[in-house]
Amino acid sequence: MTTDAPAVSRTTILVTGTSSGMGLHTAVELASRGCDVVATVRSEGRADVLREAARGRGVELDVRILEVTDHDAGRALVDAVVHDHGRLDVLVNNAGRGCVGTAEDLSMKTIREQLEVNYLSVVALTRAALPHMRAQGSGTILTVTSVGGAVGQPFADAYCGAKLAVEGFMQSLAPVALAHGVRVGVIEPAAVATEFVGSVERAGGEDSPYAAQLQAYLDRTAGAFAAAQSAESAAVAITDAAPAEEYRFRHKTGEAARAFAGRSLAGLDGSAVLAMTSTWIA
Image (cartoon, rainbow, N blue to C red; front, side):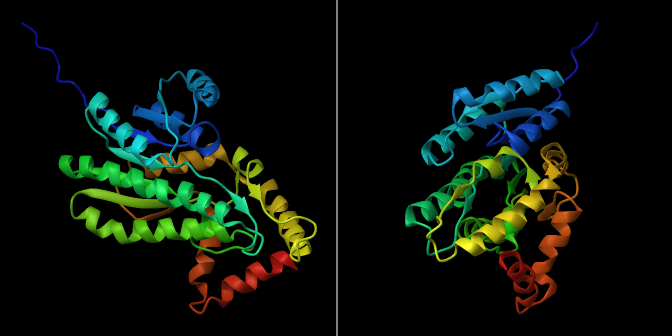
């Protein structure tokens, strides 16, 4: 007489912003490691490249549509994932949006959009996931921020503001969530070669009083991204951090990120960061 072996529970991971770059490679890498991955994209038309990448690695993804700024849709999606997969072990908040421009050239509409995508959508999905994870007594919420969440940079006023906000939110939440078995953390990439760079919104034209400084910044940034970390490499770091056995709040995707973010604490009066970033716009 034989008996069926008990079903092995696989880790269920929800990853947002997976149509390209780090998100795409993270979703595929997690699936290749045996996880059940729910990967979200903004529209069905953006899913083809993701599905092709998954087929190339011989893995399957549960691809779903989500506009992360639709908070009701986000909550419904999280509930559906738990219903369909039985649980939610890890949420990777990866979806993000870039913006280049200084305060005087930015519109309030642009600033709000940065907060909506990079901060409020993350808060909303985190709030949606927490009750499920708390009820099961375990879970991980990992948010992909940026070294811009540790170091404010010229012409990244709105972007860094939103990333700093989400890091503050997560660091405040972390000890409370941990008391209920839920690990909260952030992962900070430095320059990563992705489509994200090409899609960054820019504010301020040739008639801006900051035009020369902006051009100097863009020239410097182009050089930095010429030697950027690959999206595949960053995704491996994210994948390692998502279901990691050892908990820590802050992760980096590589040595460049560790060195850069370290400047934020190198001088407690802020002088180390300003001395560095001031050279970028000279």
